[in-house]
Amino acid sequence: MSILDDYIHKAAKALLRGDPVDELCREIIDVLDVQYRNPKQITALQSNNISFVYSPSDLKMILGKMKVLREQRDQEFYGLHGLKTITEHIRYLEDAIDAGMGGNDLKALYERIDRVYANYYDSYTDGLSGWSCLDDDFSDKQTELRIDKLKHFRDVELRKMKVVEAQAASLNVSAKSESTSIANSTVDLSVVVEHIDNLPDSSLAEEEKTALKGMLADLQTKNEKKREKKLQRLLSWLATKGTDVFIAAMPYIIQAVQFQM
Image (cartoon, rainbow, N blue to C red; front, side, top):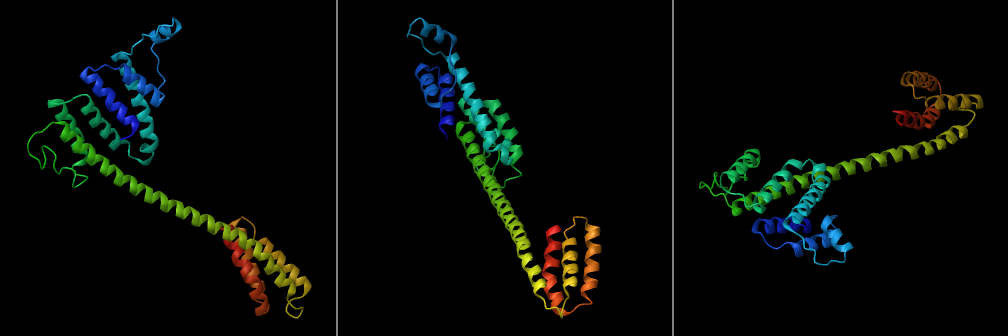
């Protein structure tokens, strides 16, 4: 249980029992930095009257603010992972304990929540009143058991989501790595051009080298149809040349096509 959850529980119980609340209100405001001030408190401070005491109505306001903070925290942590509903059901059960709910009201809450999970998680009904535990026991103990079960299932689902996120991150890293590799390969392709320049004149004349480099450069077009047409033209041209020319040009052809795909 977090500090926020603990103070929500303490505040609700104090209101339920009718306990003095001044000290608890001051502690919550100090520890959680809850932005709350009773107008009467401002008047007391302005008149140097230090006898101001927080009332149950103040604690109700503070409790409401804490629940808003908890809802925001739940949404940021659980809502983004698709666990909003199960978290809300946990909160309903926790609030039922804090409010001292029992009898038919608690029975109705049990039925509402149990029907969601009983057929989804095989072990959910183990030990629950009205299910494997056949007696009708509407008590804090039964409510806490449901809370523990839902928290366990939420943790299981969260771990699954974390695994999926980790796998997605791994795939993203792999994709970036592959993209970087391809980008780096375009730098290496300049070496292929050098190889063409270094081919002996007996294999390829200077004007033919220039023509070949021009045809290779033409493969950089983003128009798929034009690239395919230029590729066919280049391959037909290479078919009339020697093996060494084909070997020198082929890596560039493959990488240029992959880079544009």
